[in-house]
Image (tube, rainbow, N blue to C red; front, side):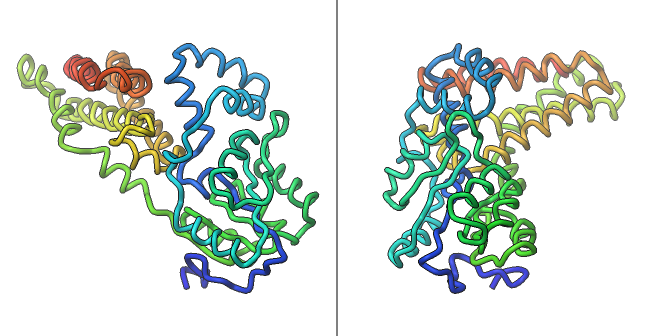
Length: 335
């Protein structure tokens, strides 16, 4: 038993094979977000696709997802699946349980997932008009099966309204706090803990190369003005260091899934990686604005170069051949 008496790792608590189990996709069946991976693939294939993405977004998220799904084809073998949870689903299937893939991803993408695994009896997904998440998903499932007539497996706060209408909850790839919140609404049949955290992500982003590159910030200051205010100097270094870390996070997560070095990073939640990178970069910009606004431009250059290298250069030649010199120059400019 886990925290708050919640059974871990698929422990059966009397779930009936007659009650369908509805399963979320992004963050639940897979560690990643397939719509996000499809966006990255589209941007790698067409550098001007960003303009079209903005245009599609003006028509709503459901429309955006439909357009992305019709113009990309993901290799399901490269997707980082939550194999422990899939083993649980396979056992439920053997027991004769109806499995339903219910996701905010577009239907075209969801049906490819269903075809890949051969586990699901039905697919319910966004259709180009309705973005099926949160309350919208809850209403759809109640119309389809009835209130308290289905179980639901999900991984985020957005799933709380769905759990409130379900008979039992299965919490997957989530913090124990979410499992406790779900348990306040419905019985939690099983809990599959999250495998990663902000600490583990940062520990892999901050390596020797990150530290050495950041230390170059001190080169101009020590060479030309060794009596410079220590406090200001350290603040500038800190801003530069966390900017490089943010760039590394973005680079590693934006890397092509088929690239061997990126497979671990593709298994991490986009919300965790990109959210952490955005937060770090925002902090660095605030520090720069406080101590010297001229720092903002080179800090922007560090991040934008890293993102561009991850998106567009890896397929042709190692991006570090171009990215590292530009970023190193920007660090020295910061100093």
